[in-house]
Length: 374
Image (cartoon, rainbow, N blue to C red; front, top):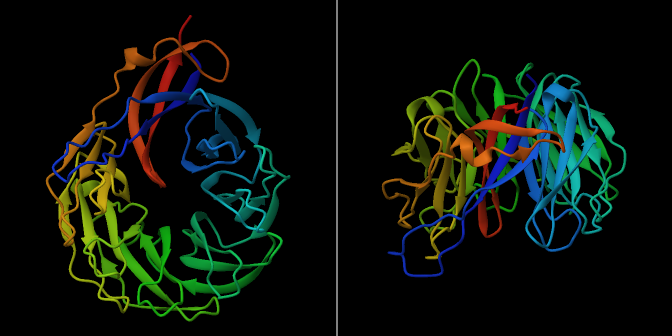
């Protein structure tokens, strides 16, 4: 039988009520896409007011675009071509035209592809920039005070972070390469010491499970601080102010520990020892959002073995309440009759794989595999 994949999107409807209000998530919406999506990004790519999705599929060297129609349905277009085995994707305006552009890390091709968006759901052909070996994650942010967007790429196979300095037209020039041992797999950007210079937080997960902080100098170069050990199989880091002191803190899902590690920042790039917050089984990803409307950041995890979204409600002091399994397992029969890529119906089994934050909603992504029905 032919293997296929769908994505179930779960939107967390914000509760504009008191802090004691119950957290509720909307019903899942199944969006069929190509097989085995490895990464996802969200933005309004056609500027119609709806949130659209791009998924990356390493097995087919392709990107697929899911555009949300006014009625809430998603139209799937693609494949979009970038490089070989796309492993990470981000949507961000690179050239100042207010249209989201695509930035893609290509694991096998050792490149970053940039596809300039037209604002109507279409993109230019990819333009590639060479990076290190095995790019596994990226973040786009202003790293050198020139008001343009730069890119930092973690290269897992040669233990480096490479900076690409952006121009005003969506082009890039190579910048500094920083050594980060341990197999870097995720990265985030934040001004950890509040000096106006963007810093980087790198997660390593191969030879060592750790957080590595790279303090920015304001010119696109960085100095490395001592690695901070974390639990095995750490996720992409989430950054937010969890205790109200206006200093960025970090949360990392520890898949093998069934927990989130919360690191409260000191404001100088160093952190308190981590607070372990229990989640569902094998959390693959974590995101920060105020899901109950009380003005405090909460944490949400996609729990891959429990098939739940754990909601950890923030108390505003860096601690979190006991988890609420806000989205329970999606049963296979609920997807019977879905059409994958315009073909036959499919019977599927759901597995939570990731989560990302989109303004006022948390978007949980479930990678769903199954078999085509007769």
